[in-house]
Length: 311
Image 1 (cartoon, one colour):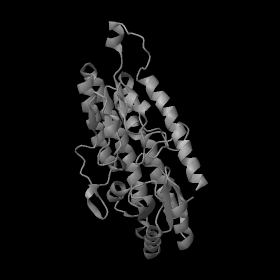
Image 2: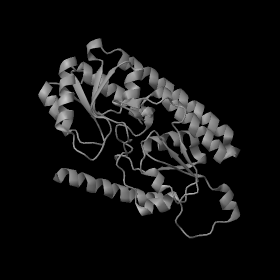
Image 3: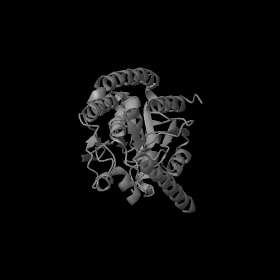
Image 4: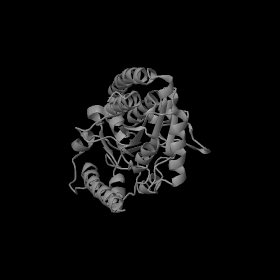
C-alpha cells in the first residue's frame, strides 16, 4: 500500500514537472512578438503521449515544436490532467491523439483549445478487447504496419498546418516509414523464429494484441486494460491456468505498472519472469526505449530471449 502511494506521489511530481515544461513550450511569457517573429514561429504540436511525440518529431523535423502531454514513464490510461496543463494545451496549434478509447481524459483537457484534435489511428482496422466486442484495443501502434498509418496521418496534418514545408514533411515521413519497415523485418524474424511451443506471450496488460497477431503468436494477460485497481484473484488464477496449459516458459510485464501480480503467476507456475516490456510510454534518453523504434527492438529481443531462455 505504501509503495502504491509513493508511486502515485512520484508520478504526480513528474506530471507537475511536465506542466512546467508544457507551459514554457507553449509560450506563457507575456512578451509581444514582432510580425517577423510570428511568421518564423514554429507550430506547437501537442501529442497525448510520448510515442506519438516521437513519431511526430520524426515527421516534423526542425519545422515543428512537439511536446507530449503525458510525461515519459507515466501511465496513460489513468492520467489526471491539471488546470495548468489545460492552460498549456489552450496555446497549441494542433493536438494529436491516439483515439480508440485510449485517452478518456483528453476531451475535457482540450475544451479551452481552439486547435484541432486529430486521431492519428484513423484508417487502422481495430481489434476488439477480448471479451468486449464493443470496445477496440487502443494499442494499434504496436503493429509496425499500423504505425505507418499513424505516420501518414501525422504527415497529412502537418501539411495542412504548415503547407510551405510540405515537401520536407513528405520526405521525413517516407524516410521514417522505411526505418519502421526495417525494424519490422528484424522484429518478425526474431519472433518468427520461436519454436511453436514457445509462441505465447503472457503480459500484465492485453496491450500486445496487434503485435501478436502480426507475429502469429497467442496472447494471454492478467487484465485487458491497465487501471489503478489491483489485479483480482480470478485474473491471476486465469493467467496461471493459461501458463500451465500451454507450458509457457516465461512471462512479462509492462514498464508503467507493478509486476507483483505477474511475479505471483511466475511463482505459481515455475515460469521465468522474462523482463520488462514497453508499450504505453518511452523512457528518458539513456533508457532502454527512448524512441519508438528502440521500443519495438527492445520488446522483440526481450520476448524472444525470455521465451528461449537466452538471457
